Image (cartoon, rainbow, N blue to C red):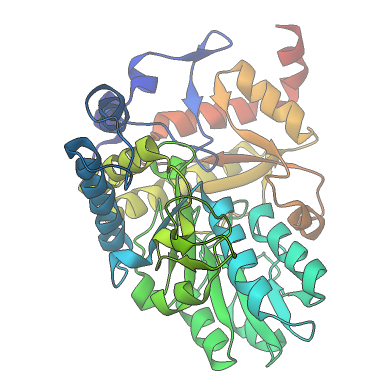
Length: 411
């Protein structure tokens, strides 16, 4: 098992002793974004200082070398999620871009007004709003798989609502508020039995738990680089190759076509290049490879095990305060969603900030879920492999004094 304190030496944000409100920073907003290790920064800097060139745009060494490095990144991601081949790896701007590509490039092309899309109330906006737009455009229906009383998605509940009209089941592998791990393999099996595809939002799962797309049998999987120690503005869409061939590009332009003429006769390249119009986020691609290499060296099983133990510790200690309500005490992921009793979530987050603790407050881009929980907003503390028990202890101590939140406004 690794030592999170030792790993912090790899992260400038820790070495630079960043402070908030004059207090040492306690970073507990990893579900939003993660810190970047030196190797990622070095990969990005090296592109600008030693390797600057475009890709697929020149017959010279720098360009060829960049073509090779981008292909190496695809192969790294292929191994990381166990895709069949690197042609199933599409570079996008992030999870949002990936899900929009599936929604508009595949669903809007093949669904009809008689079809149905199934979501859950726990989905992030990025896995809700594109499907709303598809439904609005073609007149199909968006319905919801019921959650269990504590907010979990189960195969049994999918079976209650799925039908032959269902063409898309789009769900998060790990939800970003409650942190439950969905039984994706079972859900995919059920979806396929009814002739539907399974679209998986992996933004909160791929950085934290081992992901094997062939074993899960997902049809599409989306995730972002910045949530796994990589740069912002780079993400991945995995798709089964046969489905990618059926999907239309969301954007068109240079680099994704085989031909076009004055009459409008256009031929697109095969996946993945047909989805990568224009100059790609090359620095992001190289930084993403460095990030995946880094977390792979730690080991995804190790990360998952450590975070499970840290989550249990956090829940136990927070409950001992008697001063908060936890909405996902039994979920598996390293996310604790709570409210300090009788304190509005944003006031609580402001108070935590006054103690140097960075947590997210609000609706967390999952606005439907708050109706389900019966609350206006919540506070979310989210951990990663570099989060320590001391970070959790700082949060717990702050929650003990949460009724003093007004003090934060007079510092």
